Length: 425
Image (cartoon, rainbow, N blue to C red):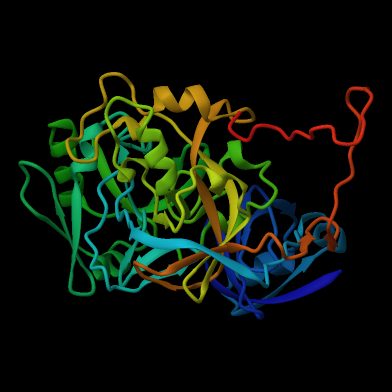
């Protein structure tokens, strides 16, 4: 059995947050007398959800607020849930970072950024000073997530950072709303709201009445009905949304704050250019809500489907963990806040970009952060060098050829044409 020494950060009736001696963060969620580990942060070695029993000594220690405790993780658990995934040594440049998008409020407009600003990439998502990507979310009076899919005018809510902690929030016909992140972290701590992002449950903190009234009036035209909440934790605590649980490289810490799936998403502008040749009215890349816009050195649409690793600049490294499947959101014009009357671009994407296992079209790739770092516009974007012998994670060995299983018998001869599956199918 492996023993891990940890320090108690905080606990309540719903969760326990710990910090391990090797720098990892651990969150346990209570379920009766058991706790479910929903997050253990480590870039190279991570753990997925599993039930573990906390003994009476541990429970007593937590109740007493003891500073240090010991959590026993079994060897079987370690072998079953630790995934090995080897980071590339060699990289190949493919283009530059054309645009960075931080969305302070989920489903609302992007933050106005200066081109020369360095943006931090951490396990929760993109951060500029106090502003964290999608750390604010609008919910209903029933604590249900509210998005622009139902209320398209939400994309016209824009934000601007003033100083280090003040966020100005604007919308057509509304007075400017001022939000102080310092106030959120101090004055509302402890006011828990239990909500969810799709089927992934998460706790949040109320921002306050004046924010609730502002968003209720703009979105609903009423004084009440909506609430603004804030993600208060220093680490991801959400479970992975159910539709992505079978993705082999997706890790628990990739969920981030209130994002739909992961903390990071990249759009290849060449792919959007190709899409725009197929639809009657071109769409802006911002309609796809990506954090990173990649401008390829050589225009190549949809090549991102095959990538495994991405590095931006000198430091930040990401694992490609899933395709970004599309719903009706990209049909909303980011400038006018109106839906496309013909259901584009989703209608066209459905014709040629379907992903069978999701029954949805895909455009863009979800990323999981594997090495933190700062990025800025015009940074070079690299992918893994396909000429390097890559380690096969499930075998921890390099591979240079593939084994085949016969599915349909037939005769072959030298100089026959060899086909692969059509990646656009």
